[in-house]
Every structure is written in structure tokens, then in C-alpha cells.
Image: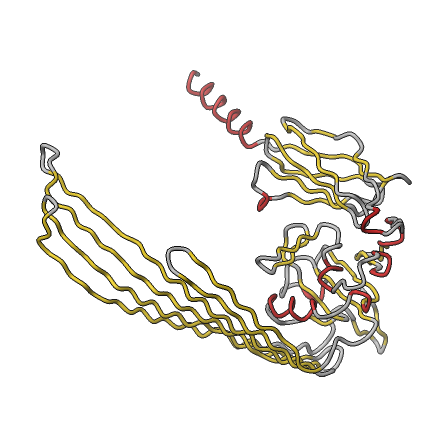
Length: 380
């Protein structure tokens, strides 16, 4: 009986430890509740594990699966001042109404309302870019950062929606390039040339099996710029020794093809040491082994390919990527007995490794969202 009670207590403790809580609330502005506002919370300085949510048509949000503890939060919506908040979560909690005020500096005395910016279209959300009132120099990337639940990491060149990687389409067609190339392409285009942006938080049927996550479709007023363009970047890093990082990003686009090349180089010199001690039984030092390394790591990464759009349903994408690493290590090793060197060696070790990645081929024979039956087209 005692054993059974003990097991029950352990189970209850385990359940209590694993219990999570829910945070909910309502977001509004001066005119009423505010749909499609982004709400995010995180614990301490751990912004990597931020939990994101979006308010519904009534301005309500619910964040589930939160552990017990103190949280920092932020509410944001385009054209509004960001609203920070704090909450101590030890049970399911509903916050008081979170009220946003217009960002007068950003809007230049033009007020943006949720009904103008966003519009529901069945299984997708349409964002009217012209109603965002972005600065004249704003780019495609600036517009994408206004998607509810989105986060763009400038240092890592990643765009996420509700903490998930996103597939970017251009006029309904996937842009099959690395995100560095995608960023370079979209940063060179003006946001005012976007007609609208469609946000699909659930993966559309035609991409299931290939992609699992949100999909964003940029619909342009005109075709993306054709011709040759690119960028070159470089930086120096000083730790104990001077390192360098550089990249070359080139694109050549026509109305039906996109050919790209991305090359990066990273030179990382390091110095590090290992020391080992051996003792006699009376703790007297018997021997010390020292190993000093002077390491030079040079890495190269290449990604190149071409995409050919034959028609609306047929395309061919060929992608080639690979990396090459050169690792040169000078090793100075010394064995000492009571500070007296009894053995010393100098060696060099070269480690050259190469990885040549995939050639990616895909051909869309049909649009699986359209079903054919008896000479008629039926939309599912």
C-alpha cells in the first residue's frame, strides 16, 4: 500500500512539473478591437524561444503551452507604437485589454486601420501593401516584415512566421534560391511595386509533401527586375588573430529564367592549448604535458543553379551546392618534469575535406489543386 501511495505521489509530482499554462487577452486601438496584431512572449533573455500569436477578427489571442514563470511580452501592429508588457504566469491567465496607440512618426499623420491593411480571403490573409504607408525607399523585405507573426533576423538572413520557416512565392511561383540570394533579390525591389501579399499560415495542398510551414505569395504590379545584378561583401574579425569573411552574390534574370551564383569564404585562425598534469601519490607533480595549436581554417561554400519557368504549371529547377574546407594545424608539444623539458616536438597536420552537394531537379506536370472530371474543371 505504501508503495502504491508513493507511486501516486510521484505521478502527481511529474504531472505538476510538466503542466503548462495559457495566456490570453484582447488587443485594441482607439477605434475598437484590433485583428491581426502580433503578440509575442519570452522568458528572461531567451528571445530565441519566443512564442508568437496573432489576434483573431475580434482582437483576441491565446498563447498555449507556456511554462510557469516570469515572461516579457510585446504587442506590435503596423502603424502603431509597440507595446511591451510583463506577466508572471503561475496559472492560466487573461490579461487586461492591451491598447495600442498610433505611431505618429511612422505614419506622418496618416492613420492606418486593421480593416484597410488586412483582408480575409478564405484560407489566406491578404495584406494591402499600399495601406502600410511604408517610407518611399522601403523594399520587399520591409513589406514582408509587416506580416503578422513574422520575424526577420538580419544577422542570419532568415524570415520566420510564427516561429516557422516560410516559403516565398513570387506571383504564385516558388523562388528556389538560398535565402541569402532571396534577400539580395528582394532588397533591390521597391515595396511600392507590390500589389498585395497573400499569407497562408497552413501549407496549401499543392505544396504538401514538399513543404511544411507557412507560405507567402508576393503579387507584383510588374515583373521582377530582369537583367544582371548582385552584391559583394566582406568583413574583418579580430580575436587573437585577424580573420576575414567575404561573399559574392550574382543573379541574372529574364522573364522565364533565373540563374544565380553564391560564393562565400571564411578564414578563421585560432590559437588554443591543452595541458595535462600527472601526480605522485603524495600529490607531488610528476609530469606536465603541454600542447599548443596554431590552427588556420579556410572554408568555401558555393551554391549555383538556374530556374526555368516553362508555363504556369511546368518548371525546371537545377541547383548545385558544395563546400570545401582546408584545416592546417601546427602543433607544438612539450613534456616537462618539474618544469624541466624532457621531450619536445613540432608537427603539422593538414585536414582537407570536400563535400559536393545535391543537384536538385523538379518538374511540376500539373496543378494538383485543380481536378479534371468529365471535361469540366472542379475546384476542391
